Amino acid sequence: MIRLLAGYKAPVAAIVLLQLVQTAGNLLLPTINAAIIDDGIVAGNTPLILRLGTVMAVIAALQAAAAIAAGYLGAVVAMQLGRQLRGELFARIQSLSSQEVAEFGTQSLVTRATNDTQQIQSFAVLVFTMLVAAPVMGVGGVVLALDQDVVLSSVVIIIMPVLFVIMYLIVRRLVPLYREGQELLDRTGGILREQIIGANVIRAFVRQRHETLRFARMNTGLTGNNLQSALVVAAMLPSIMIVVNLSSVAVVWFGGHRVHAGEMQIGALTAFVAYILQILLAIMMAMYVLMTAPRAAVCAERIGAVLDTVPSIRDGQDLHGTPTDTHDDRPSRYAGPVFDGGGVVFRGVSFSYPGAEAPVLEDISFTAMPGITTAIVGSTGSGKSTLLNLVPRFLDSTAGLITVGGADVRSVSLDSLRGNMAVVPQRSHLFTGSIADNLRIAAPAATDPELWEALGTAQAAGFVRDLPLGLEAPVGQGGTNFSGGQRQRLCIARALLRRAPLYLFDDSFSALDYDTEARLREALDVAIGRAAVIIVAERIATVTGAGLILVLDDGRLVAQGTHRELLEISPTYRQIAESQLELEDMP
Image (cartoon, rainbow, N blue to C red; front, top):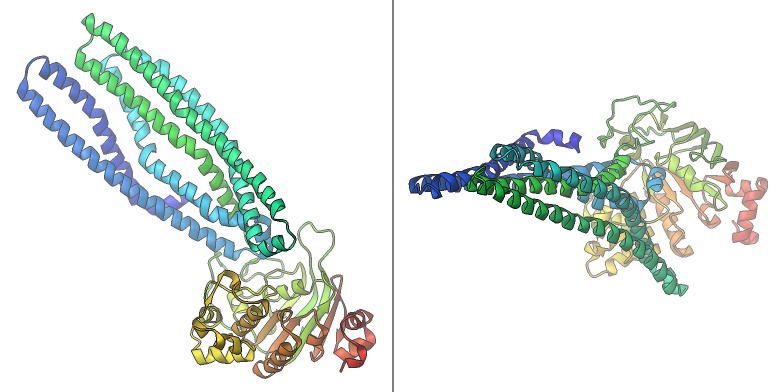
């Protein structure tokens, strides 16, 4: 937070100054009140009473104005800090690879960007409104109390250590409770998200009761944690009030005896009581801030873990991972095309997850040329999607060389690399908005006729025309108001609008019936005939017309060739084909 505050030096300085004005007013009022009592009321000096009363009114007005201004500025700066922190978190999350996102967990990242940021923002408000005033009021109160009566000030010396002990015990207990609470909040949110997304699966297997109990257990744990921390916080006020009330009784008792003995004036006693209360108020304010600090510290630690994560996939790295430019993690501008028609080349490429015992891919070499469809097939878990994700650098290879159009993918900017390809991911994802909004993600300037052309190629124009609003039909979060096949066709249409020299389809036809898929593949051949196309497919029927088919088995490239060639030379491919098609029906 200190780093973020560097950009708000002027507002923070103004807040400190206003807090000092407010606190100075608080400290001056009891002394002036004492003078009114001792020198005005007791002496019967009415002009002095009126004059000092006017001074008190002016100070009170200035104090109120300073408090309002400080509160307003503090809230504004705190909100700006929250906005900036959320922005930095969003930018960093966007720069993380899917592997790094998985390590944190999607729900945890959402919680850190929302709840954790809110906690820090709330703490900032307290800091700006209380933390500056508390020490000044406390120290000033002690000095002015001593000025009123040194002997009676011994009460302050006794009560302050007691209050500090209470503060220490409360803070020490709250830190682990708050840390555990944020973790429980992550897990509870994760379970809730799973149950909402998988509601139909839960109903289909009649697991509502089981899932209800699972959520109830986590919810009970979170409730128990919140209850414990709330009880600790609730214990603070009674503890403080006991000390405050006993201190007030002691001051009045001993102060009354000193007034009776002529060792102290009534006005001084009144001022002393006011300063004691101000000292205790300052300590209470400090305790309240410190009581909130543990949760903010835990949240800051969790947010810092995300912000301190250096993305493993960065712009412009050489083969050894050394940056070749001065990119500073901000989204880079489009750097121009890198695809010059040289195709996609893999040379001895391997990929392993950190700490994995065996590589996911090992020693993969092939060339995908423009104008030719390259298909990747293999059993489930053979590494097909992982191989495809290496091309746009959603993952980075751990060995070997990948070039696109003759350029090493790690030597160019990510925007330049990805700007020259269109990707249809395995999971068809649409965003909240309209169909037109989703399609224009790939081409913001696309006209309606261009949208309809892409939809026609993707075999989606028919059902979109049937919608009452057509292109402006609403899309729910994730596209859940469309079927799986409709989502896939909309995602394919979105990719086609990119008009890229390279298309990557990750099992993007699996939800389509055979007739629709056949028409779509025929239309694609016309629409993107001169582009390089790489397809990951589960269906053999999808790849029979491909110019090059790669066969993966347990992370290794065991064969490559055309459909007919592979039927003869690759037992793995023939086994896959036989499990899906009757050989006599194969072309």
